Amino acid sequence: MTINQNTDQVLAALAKQTVELPSWAFGNSGTRFKVFGTPGTPRDPFEKLSDAAQVHRYTGITPRVSLHIPWDLVDDFTELAARAAREGVTISVINSNLFQDDDYKFGSLTHADPAVRAKAVAHHVACLEVMRAVGSKELKIWLPDGTNYPGQDSLRARQDRLAESLAQIYTATRGDETILLEYKFFEPAFYHTDVPDWGTSLLHCLALGPRAKVCLDTGHHAPGTNIEFIVMQLLRQGRLGAFDFNSRFYADDDLMVGAADPFQLFRIMFEIVSQGALDPSSGVNFMLDQCHNIEPKIQGQIRSVMNIQEATARALLVDLAALGEAQREGDVLTANGLLMEAYSTDVRPLLAGLRESMGLAPDPLAAFKASGYEARVAATRVGGIQAGWGA
Ligand code: PSV
Ligand code: MN
Image 1: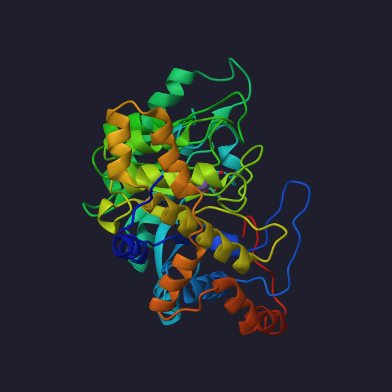
Image 2: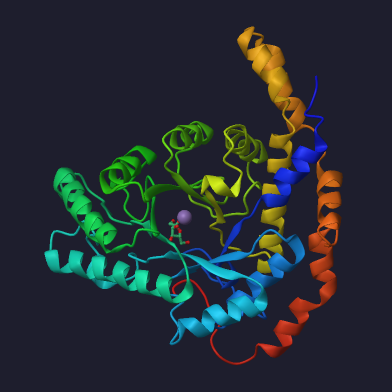
């Protein structure tokens, strides 16, 4: 079995790859049972950006940070953007929040009461203002709306109300701004959710217009779902806007991407690579959406970025010419073997070389640990309230 021998091409593709970090990964998080505190956890969005910048300093490929509103609300967003710039990162996707307000108990953008829907739409208009203040071009919407019991509400009426609310948000966007519509098949609602799957998200995006795209969160699928097929189909339609990478063993675990199923991550990255969607010009935003409940948070983010890089490097090593030939000839075992050959290759030396060529330490985790940053922030970030889920 062969692998792609064009190392220069592989390295050039890897050098252009970027991953966006979620601000909330740096705050304390947990399950509904317990949120554990960690010394040095940021106390405000400014400190979250400083931690995110550490990940970029050691991996070299995470120059952007997503914010969640209202968790990351500050008095002066120009100041926050300036802090990001000083730290060497930029503020990127703005996430709205429709899941922590009493008014949204029975829904937000789908609520039967027009006043609640108007409030939810207005929240997105406020998010657009944040975007303009920080220079962001993407608004991400995850809709927690749904019902717990059959008959609780009209499935059809909720879709119609959703379409109308989304259209109002889309109308408020400018020509260079994109809406990312995320889907999730359960939770917090358990009988049905109003955007449960990629098909529903895509239908709404198609109705809205070309600047509405689907966000695929890898944790938001039923066990056994062929996620790479969804990736392929959305790319085929030009509507794959972004990933929320993480991994799951059971539900929406939000664990480190590649921890639960590195082979699935490889298969996803192979669809990306083989359709040319790794290149930044494809417009696909590769983001993390994770929580580090028990592991050190900055290290958890660094490890996740390394996992994505390793999966990408392996995907780039697939011998596409040989694969095409095997597929045309119906040579099943060779075709499958070519994928497995690339997947089985140890790409860590290649990535260490890439980092050295970028002026970085070959082992980002070791270099970060040796820097003493964790001990420094644990000693200096005293007093105040640590940022966490919901703040
Ligand atoms: C929902 O589970 C979700 O994946 C959405 O992206 C939210 O905004 C995010 O998690 C919060 O972590
Ligand atoms: Mn998500």
